[in-house]
Amino acid sequence: MNILLPTGHRPLAWLLRSVAALALILAMPAHATSPDKLAWVAGDLPPFIWQTKDGPQGLAYELMALMAARIGRPVEVKFYPWARAVRMAQEEGHYGVFPLARTADREAQFKWLIPLAHVNYSFFGRAGNGRAQHQYQHDLHDLNALRASRVGVLRGSPIIKNLQAENFQNLILAKDYKDLLRLLSEGIVAAAYAGEPMLRAAIADSTHRPQDFRVGASLKSAELYMASSLSLDQVEAERWLQAYRELQKEGAVSRLQQKYLLPRP
Figure (spheres, rainbow, N blue to C red):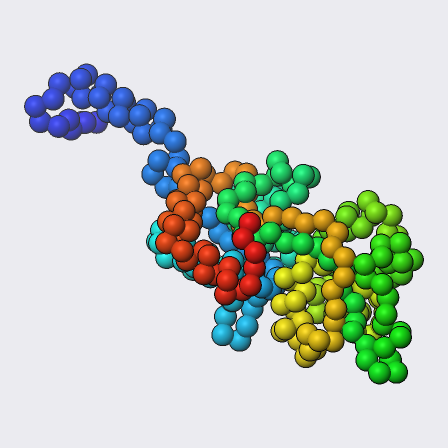
C-alpha cells in the first residue's frame, strides 16, 4: 500500500508534527471550542415567570430574554412542575432555574448566578366584611394563635421548614398558588404562608380582589436567584454574568424591578 506524503516534507518530520498537533487538540478543554449552552427551566411563579396566552411573562423571564439577546442565545425557557425543575438543575447537566431561594441547605448544590429580589415570607388571611367579618378575624400577627390554626403552604416549598422550626404542626399543603388561594377563600385554612410578591401576583392574576385579603406577620425572608447546575461550564456562566452586569449598569435591571414592584436584592 502506498502512502502519499505532502510534497517537500520528510516522512518522519511530517509524522511527528501530525502526532503533536493531534495531541494538542485532544488536550484542549472541551469548553475552549464548544462550551455547553445553558438551558433554562422554570415553573409558573409570578411575578418572576408565568405562562400567558401570549407567551411567558415576568421579571426573571424578561431579564433572561435581555441577557440571551446580548450574548446570542435563544430566548427560551421550558416549564415543568416546580419541584421537577429544581431537581433537573440540581442533578443534571447544564440547566438554569429561576426563581430559586438561596438557603443554607441549597448553598453547595447550585451555582448562584444572578440575584433577582429580596422576599419576605408572610401570613395572608381573608378580609371579611359585614356579618361574615367575625369568622375571618384570625390574628395574623400572633404566632401563638396561628399555631393553633390550619395554615396553608405550597407542597415541596423550602419555607415549610420555617413553619416547622416554629412548631407549626397543622399544615395544609397546596399544589400551587391558585390552590393556596382556594384553600384560603373557602375557609379551609385560617392563613396562607407564602412569599409576599408571589401571592400578591397570584391574587392579581385570579378572580379575587386584592381587598379580599390582608397580610399579617412576616416569618423569615430570602434572596431569590437565577441559579444553575454545578457542572455548568464556567465560561458559559461568565457570559451570562457579564450580560447581567452590563444591563445592571445601564439601568435595565432596576427598571424591571420597578415594573414588577419588587425590592432589590
